[in-house]
Length: 104
Image (cartoon, rainbow, N blue to C red; front, side, top):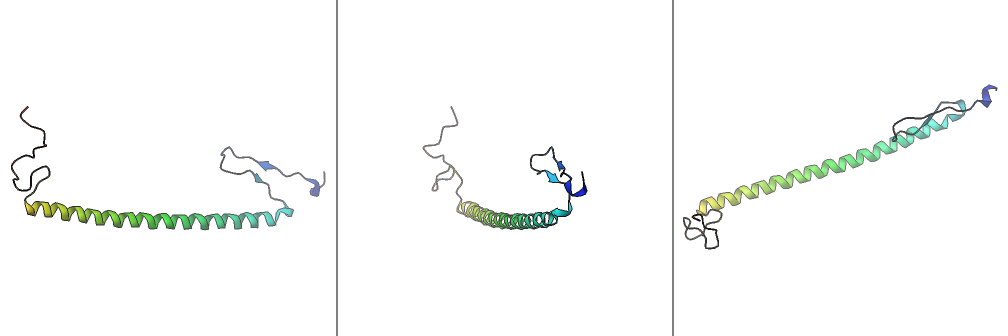
């Protein structure tokens, strides 16, 4: 066979996520440029998605911090008012009527 009649060699990968690559040939000059442009677009899309996820994580961190502050304020308010969880507001040392008895 002459140089122009050569067959392309397909190299297959064992990894399913990798597409088979074709050995370079002089007529494939546009192929690598298109592949590069496609990969650059994919990288840009992935970077945009990563930026969205980073922003979401930061939003959730801010919300958690605000909720932690709110919890601390409520705990402090309960402590200042002399109330404890499960106790009656007017009589802090007596259990509530609906509490299970401890002496059984």
